[in-house]
Image 1: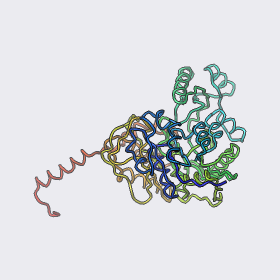
Image 2: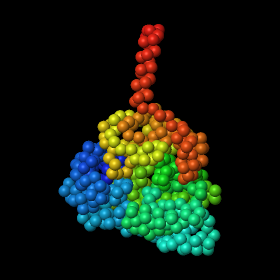
Image 3: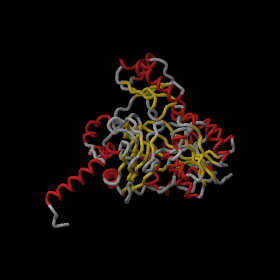
Image 4: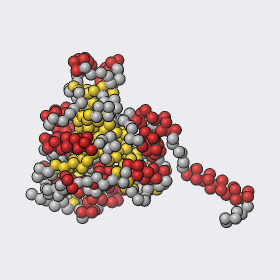
Length: 485
């Protein structure tokens, strides 16, 4: 049964909230923004048709407060809730509570969120669907148990210890040698408990030259499951992505076909609906891929897929939530160009330390082949309580080389942020690196090349411009009027 969404509350802030509001505007759907006290003057608050204060700065009192979010939806008579990404986007309890209130949940079924949120259960389902998985051991209790598994299965170091309930790079510790094992277990357990309230761990073989490749899936409530091709998300720092692209330069057409249809098979097995992503690790040495996880939400990097296919993934999520069948046929979905995305985080590009304060100057890139998803404006405050992402810059071109050239222009000529530090200098260094241009990189790229990347930074700020003007004035003063004047 189809039910039309008329007013939607976005249970998020910043970049994801603004992104979702754009599609709502296109569709004539009213939006309800929610905000914590320090976010009262944020971009998403100004853009929303209605805005509700949901609590103080700490996320537990505001953006993670289920009672306040649901009450805000009731008070504004919102008939749907979209969680965006982060916060409660993959929280099965929140999804169930929203549905129990008779409000449309723009996301997958709570049961599916719960299954896929448990890495051990997700791996079991993947194996049942005949999807290749990384050699590993579940429910790790001790170092002795890991050593026994490694000996029996012939696995050598390095290995990766992960939180079963993990995500976003938290609760993940790489172990290079046996003497590090006990300490790594304690660290992973502590991080997992702190981040997810669950210290269940698993251990897996670490793929040395791994690349992260994820397949975008959309599925409706009528049995249609389609892929929108893949994205390369290999370039990471601290296990968190900072540059993504579509399609992947790692795959040929045969591998692309295989990995995309493997993802469809898994999502059918799960009974998945709406948009979601199946993440794989691809071993460049053996040309084999292994299941990593399913992201039961809208992905940060969904924009590059929209650029290469011309589809609106948020719009498709709303169609599915309304009960409509997808009006798409797999054979008619084509890639018509290449797209890149960089995550502009408010961080020191040399240390990745968060950078908070007021944006005193902001020049947003424009021009052919550029798409910007921003959550800030000039004069906005960047509070220290939330994720450091302030903007997504996307570029596209007919070829990968073309998309890289547009990104170079975007970061080097058209983009300025002052008052806070951002990752922009690092991002520019990466896309100018010859290995990146050749498509030769792994998840260790930034770690292995950090000193070289930093040496490529071109520092410039308002002071540089003032000095340039002063030099110009001094020359005119000293030399007198010039012919061109």
